Image: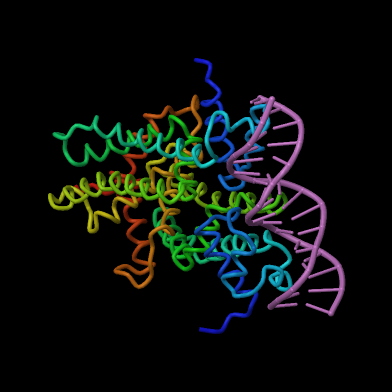
Length: 190
Length: 190
DNA sequence: CCTACCGATCGGTAGG
DNA sequence: CCTACCGATCGGTAGG
């Protein structure tokens, strides 16, 4: 493990604090104390509290996006869905603290960043809507409303950061495969 | 619709503010302004900011619990699961704003309330764990880890408050039935 | 329900 | 990275 520079240390500690206490309830003095320095000293490394939140949120957004390109566009729609879900879980499990901040604290972004964030989220959600639209048209998937299907799929995955612990019984890919399989084929034996 | 008394008006406006801005970022002056009074005047109706959060969270918790008793204990395990999920969605859709606060802001409860809240949540989750345990033992459900199954089920339902709007295409029971059916039998046609 | 006000804390800056 | 400090705002109280 490389030694993090101060800026990365700040982001890392802030991520944990924002997850545990929320963005608004975390003060710059809390953060400084975690690092053993004075609050004022933080400002030689970062410009503002909000800049930290921006970094956390947009790094996560970039992760979610960049992995989408690895999906095989030739595969069946249910296989594309399965792989999308596994990838999505993979991003979450890679950094559950940053994921928690990403999902819970994005609304505290400033006006400009907030608009950009929502625009990115819409584009990401469209990836799923497209898959469900194709699956609905071909009859491969039981879908009436592609947007509703997208929301149910993502909500199914977006709780993962709350309980996933690495080095447990399941690794990240196994969790993703299990969740995707359950979403595709249900929980009832037949 | 009955006219709410001032106390209920305060809870109602606070619920919307806590949902939109979060508990910590909502000031008593914000809340007072919504009601057209001074911040100090709030304290003739309520004792503290935290008391408001407690009311919102524990009212929701009580709703979730009281509905559990309506479930038919003689039904098959998958039918008990289906009905539990429909009921759960029903509680969420009945007040999506209070649900959002319940799910996102409970961690800002004080030490004592927080412990009580977590204890209640654990008991509620146990209801689902029991169902999945029985379904696993009988082979009726594809479950390896009842706790993991419980988490996947609740996470599937607990996003509902973010998008459900009453008087739309689907009513509350239809949404619950659709989600339960998808969780039980999956999205892939066979 | 109001005016007046409390001590504490907030994010952030100046200057070294 | 520190000391010293800023104006703004916080939850809440006293007294009417």
